[in-house]
Amino acid sequence: MTVTSYDPSQDAALAVTDAARAHIAGQISRSGHRYLRLGVKESGCNGFMYTLDYIDGPEADDERFRFEDIDVYVHREDLPLVVGTEIDFEVEGLNASLKFKNPRAESYCGCGESFSIKDD
Image 1 (spheres, rainbow, N blue to C red):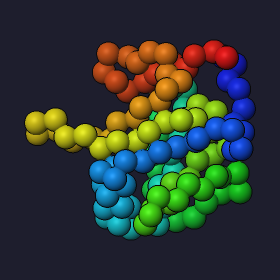
Image 2: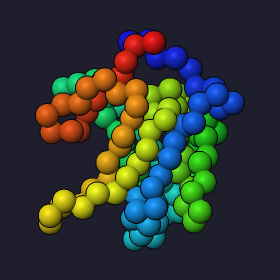
Image 3: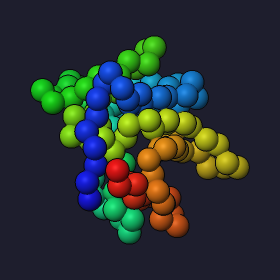
Image 4: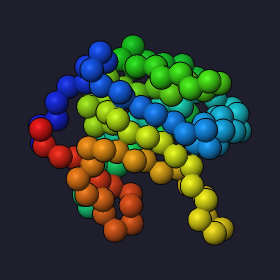
């Protein structure tokens, strides 16, 4: 699959809602680490899956995104897959989870765990 590159002067890479920011800040605090890394790996029935890792510091190929009191890092190689993604925190009945709204996602699997990207 061909994915275009990320151009920071052209692409809005990441957005985090207030609800997601508050949730992520609490999760980072409870994890004992300092930051969150958003990643993407090939997986699932639809091509790609988001990964979340709590980290103590960035790696050399990480891009930093600051949202008030939290820093979210993304490996540069993953940026083309997350360009424009909004992270939200949704509560549905007794369930609560982070939701990823990616404008480049073409389809999602039935369980919502994996997605495919539109070819450019």
